[in-house]
Length: 304
Image 1 (tube, rainbow, N blue to C red):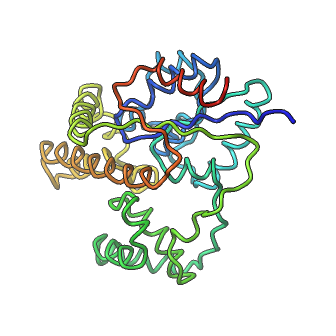
Image 2: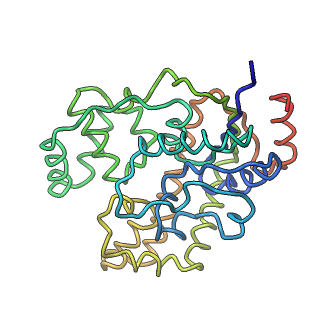
Image 3: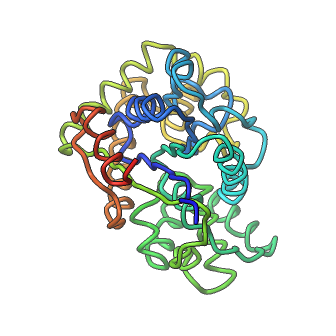
């Protein structure tokens, strides 16, 4: 029986160095990269989502980077289907592929699969949107925390679309959204090896603050300004954009907006840590580890 192909999955908090490691691994194993960063799927959002640079994308073939319009609905289920098709094609010519990203739900979708979510009645969705507009996001955050504390701990609680999606499922079924995330892995035609990058919390926070400063130097303000007319789109309900929309609307100062971006990104990193720490299969490496050492570990682990 022939050996199954190997999917090397690189995970960790935002700004920790996943992109550079995934490129080093793709180079070492002569393969390609599947991005599972849901923020980087959309065009026109290059700076604020830290899309790999032109040089980085030239160093290794990347898939699912800015491949969708911000106007197109794109769910985790859509990504699961497309990523599996891409992997099927890739494994016809390569025995190894790289999956990289900090979006835990999207990583899990590819590796473990998702349960089918029930259809949501239109009235429930409309009621939630009405409540959001009338009462604000805090009321919905509280309902989600009470109904589904497990998912609440790991999601971006400042993203109203994600909150509404989770509450739609809860109000429709009476079951928490997290209960629909597959506990039993789907049957995949590849093996998976998880590689995680880690660092002390203070180091991650420093790296986040520095990354935000670099984004601003690279033109984040101009990027966001060009998107103001579309600020209600689902793709733009994300850190780095929400805060600057408020600045351009005169609701907060630029200094406050930057402070909020850094704070909300730190919160996001904390939630990423919560999500990935529950996965006992991840082999953790300090972010300063040499890529050659990680390559050697993978070769030894998989008898390559």
